[in-house]
Image (cartoon, rainbow, N blue to C red; front, side, top):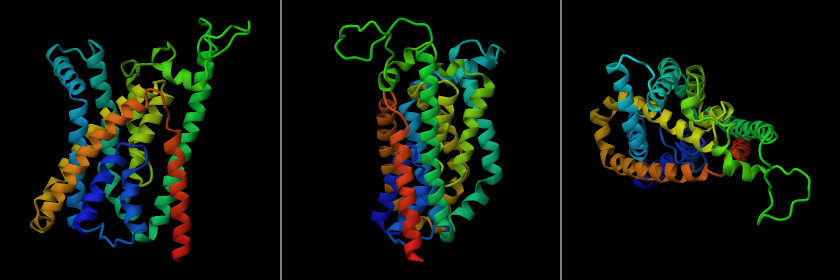
Length: 321
């Protein structure tokens, strides 16, 4: 792997880990499309990927450090006060625990087998197919979400107009457009804060991350989608998803730190550090952008992107046979 290839993969990891487009799929498909011939099953590449994931988790922790400070203090307070839930922060802390336990157990059992299967070059087409399926899931989830929002908008509440500039009323009750409803959704009584989820709901949303063990399925995408279907706003679902992802990504990487300490990994130490720094920077910029993006927008553009890229790769696979 050349130095410039390492930098490109590092930047790609930082963006695609948090954008709902599957970082693992891009790590597999981009080298395939560009004919890089990188050995992705070698121990050096594994050590390289471990460093990128650690950098991504650190970037997430830095961005949400105030939330994590409150959560950790509340978590410790639960033990000191011998009361599981005593305020919104303690509830959120234990929701994160509930959402992390399931994905952690399943990941330990099946991650190695799934990675070996899908990293075989002969299964690139399967990765592309799952990437397209990832897009379909997000688009259908947003469609289902829109139906829920329409039901909320039609519940008894003061009349709202979708017109700009406060035009004259026609005398017919007017409901807000989908976009205007997204902009106001976090203020609507029909949508929950993460702290209002039950522990079962939190566990289910967290367990959705297990689908990301399949290359092509996005961790952030399915987790945000799970939050939306549980009744969260887009912004709150994204916050919950990124908070859930931080310990999962970080702990999974820490368990593989010994790979970074092997003698053969020293040959790529320089490029690994450079790529990890770049991954951390791009991850921080990504989460900062996405938290603003989801204040008013949805998963649909990412869904279409995944479908188009997946279909393009499938076509290229057929042409190369």
